[in-house]
Structure formats: C-alpha cells, structure tokens
Amino acid sequence: MLDTLIGNTDRHHENWAVVGHRPEGKDALFYLAPTFDHASSLGCHLTDEIRRDRLSTRNTQRNMLAYTNKALSAIYALDTDKKPMSPIEVIRCARHLTPAAADYWLSKLVFVTMDNLRDLFSYLPLDRITPIAAEFAIALLDINRKRLLNLREEAQ
Image 1 (tube, one colour):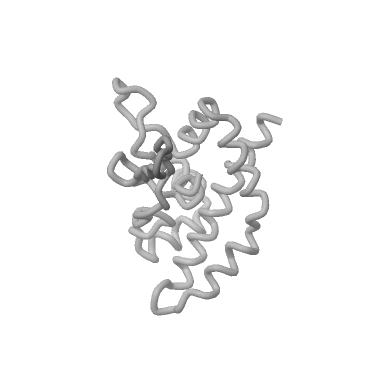
Image 2 (cartoon, one colour):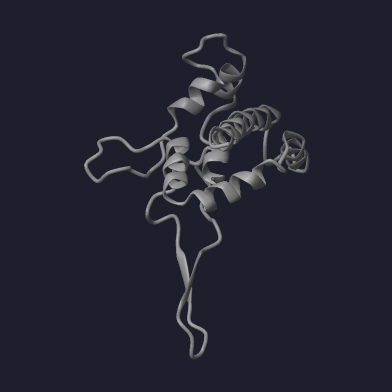
C-alpha cells in the first residue's frame, strides 16, 4: 500500500524481504521486513520543468492523473502476462487474496490526512527538494490516497 501511495514503481522481487526468527523451542516466525528502496517514487526522476508542466497542463494526456495512470508496478498477475499490474491493481489483487490485511492497512490510511502529508514536506530543507518537486509529490500523494480510500469504500 505504501508503494501505491507514493507511486513507487520499483518494488520487484529483490526489493522486499521476509525476516525469519526461530525462538528457542518454538516454530519459526516470519515477518515482512521493514520497507526499503523507495528511490523510484514521488516523481523523483522527473525534472522540475516536467513536474511544472504536469501540474499546470490542461492536456488530459499529460496531467497529474495521466501520470499516475501510467504507473506500472513490477508485479505481474500471471507468469504469462506481458505487462505488470498498476500499483492500484496490486492492491486490488492483495485485497482479494487477504481482505482482512488489506482492509486493516487501508483503514489506517484514513488517519493520514493531506495536511499530515503536506506538513512532512515542510520539514524538508530546500537544498533537498525544490518547491515544485514538493508540490508535485503532494499532488501525486493526493491522487493515490484518494484511489486507495476509494478501494476501501468499494467493499463497504
């Protein structure tokens, strides 16, 4: 869900892990490792010129919604698929396989407001992110947050 929210398109089989732990005399326990490698998210590979264009254009083929619609994950629904799923399709698939887990995390997203997300960007130093990059990232988060919350509403 985090990858979908931040528009990370690089969560392939080498970018996630499971941590195993075997307490003495007990069965092994497995946990999803803390998340890592978010380098392909929030439009970080775009120039400010492209970000500005996507934020301001009226061209529906180039705007922010079009940008988020083009995102593909690195996860395929079937081994025979030619194209990977979109990040939102991955969440739909995960929700189908494990509805309780997906619904749990989607319910947590309700408490992450756009004001919370904007506040995070206000702490970033200007030598680390340009104002237009922050504006782009916030717009991307807004679109993806709404999409995820719509998935939650679909099941209710």
